[in-house]
Image (cartoon, rainbow, N blue to C red; front, top):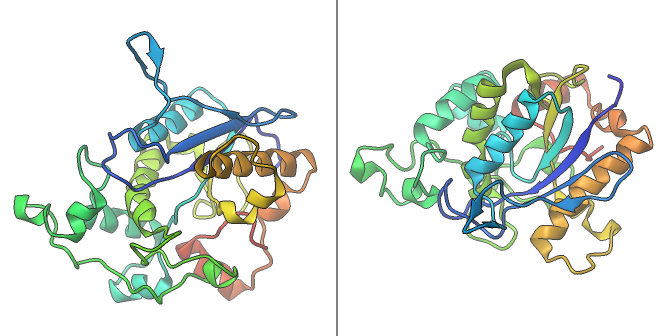
Length: 269
């Protein structure tokens, strides 16, 4: 891998409301090589004004569109891309693509107007949708990459400060959608391989807490600064020639096989 990217994208994610809701916490920053990240506005104009807030659906479509246009970007998104291997074993899942296919059946959170909580509280089941509790985990279940950090929470821990469970359950179906729609133009790391192929856009899981204190927040709120910090770290790491190092964390053969299903957080080495 040459390490050349045209654009570096940081996305602060949110599982609030529905995929078509404009959520203030959804923030996107992007930087070209050699430049500082800039806030990206949603690609919609209403009453002659460009809207500030994104929807989850728009973010996925934006990443697909850039890839189809041949933009080789590195994007970091702050939600879990997979679940602990204990979940795979509990439900008889062997691979990440198999996990994705199974997950969207039980958590169809990429459908318009579907909230994560509609699945959790049974509201979707009352309309003929999936039954709550069919695919769940425990808040004390962690992926290996989470155990390698001091503060990352379980992807199953809902309703606490700093939880990523809701954003993870909202975001995973969009990874499947991106992978199927953008096809060979996008490499979702590390599931499509630890070394991204030349010419592909790369989407990886990010954890903004690792990077946020490296840069002054200036006038950005926390959501904005998290997206900014991810984009800036990606851009700076590429400029220093070390981004390739982070795509190859020092894992044993067993750990690498585990992470091929559970995923890994880019920047944890």
